[in-house]
Image (tube, rainbow, N blue to C red; front, side, top):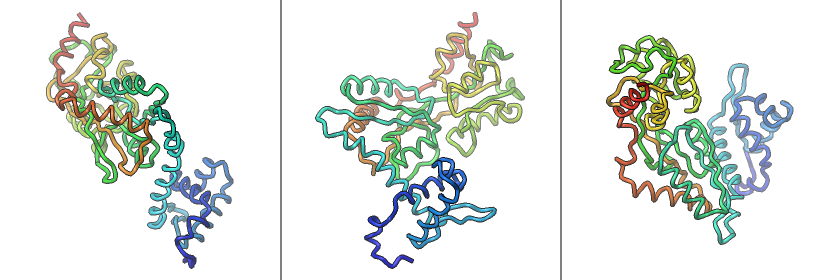
Length: 333
């Protein structure tokens, strides 16, 4: 165990060892960490041993069939993730010395975030703060949460299955999913169908279309539809799921309000159920301990103001499903 004053640890600790440990846990192996850091495996192993000697605790249980952080390792990983996340944000914070708002706002969001509130905020932000820059990263919802926890972004917009106690969530909008097929599918152009008509049909979907994931309501409906086996194609990106549906690979779930134009243009056809489509909430996620730069605060102020001023029923999309069916019929006539 360490005999020195624990208050001196920050000064004598080799932070390169902590960074190496962070990568080891993220990669799940010495080999993976060595490849990512472009180092030799013995160098990475030695760095781990040196860190364990410095801290006086075993950090990784490693053996022929096991490689996982110990309780001490998990605690260090959480602290290291927070520390390095804060360091990554220093350029944003230091860039606030100018009177005019500048710097970069990093926004991590799921691929199917479509809302006039977001679009209007983007336009207002650029108009009011022309020197600021916006970086949008499209990520799976679970990765968006990890980005916010790791302070890799200031705001996240995504679907939420389980809430993390360390984060703050603001409801942005509720979207509804429907099943759709492409022009080459046998059900394209047919009206008054039921779920029974889709039994044993091939399907495509999102990676998160699982009973234990963010698209649980969609997964439950897909189970009722009794499609043929597992989806023949999956993706974490809406555009790719849409591509597979239009290409005729199978029936797939898509946010109704997002594909309205595709239905009108004859690229997609709405399938049952026409009533009570599954609802999924989309939220803005923030880390309350994450100090926002002036640019980030300006963006969040604009977005939160629009959310507060817009009634919840006006932030509920895709319930006019019957109009989509009608437009499908009109486009095929």
